[in-house]
Image (tube, rainbow, N blue to C red; front, side, top):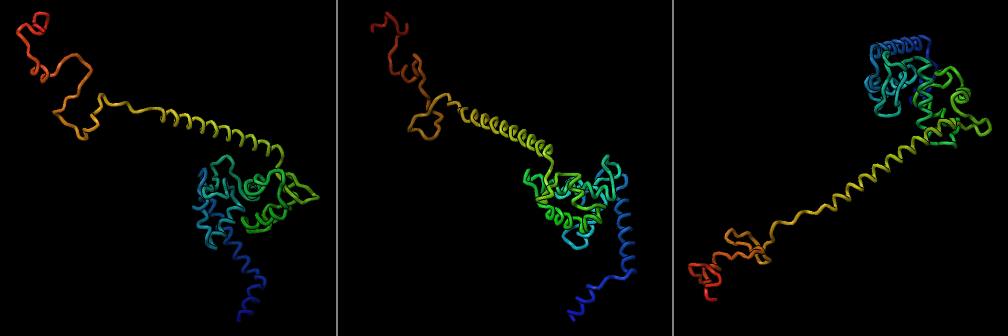
Length: 245
């Protein structure tokens, strides 16, 4: 029975089934467009659901094919609404999504070395769920020749030298800013280490562990304590030249 199931499932679908699927797809697209109406941008997860399910993956692919997505491969991906200045739909949106997908996932990290054309084809099929020419309206090689730099001999694609140079400058600025922040932080930490706690006004005797309220500290002064005054005899005139000492 398993072989019969595989045979039946591999048979071409009837025109009626295909017509029903096409109508359902149009209805889904119309519903998605209504959600985007009057919005600047909404999360991809909100409009397409969980990509971890078969239904969610299919809806994600439908959005990739028909609406413009920003930061498409990130968890914070946003679908542009009709109020966004870069709003577009259909093949124009699919082409924009393809450029961003190729650049962020493959071409920018690869740098001047580039990536094989077949690699881009596989990446595109994974996210869009359909053939490149069917989705974009032109062959992948033609598209890459227009948007990027394509080598016919090696069949490799790379981002334009101008874009790569601009990226290197941005990365260099980021590194300089990061270095300045690190130096500033290190200087602040060093200054904090140099700050010493002020010593108390007087130091307790080494043998005195607990504070004694009756204990009077000795200061550097010529005045005598009351006990010393009692021990030393004094006449009425006080201690002076006439005290006989």
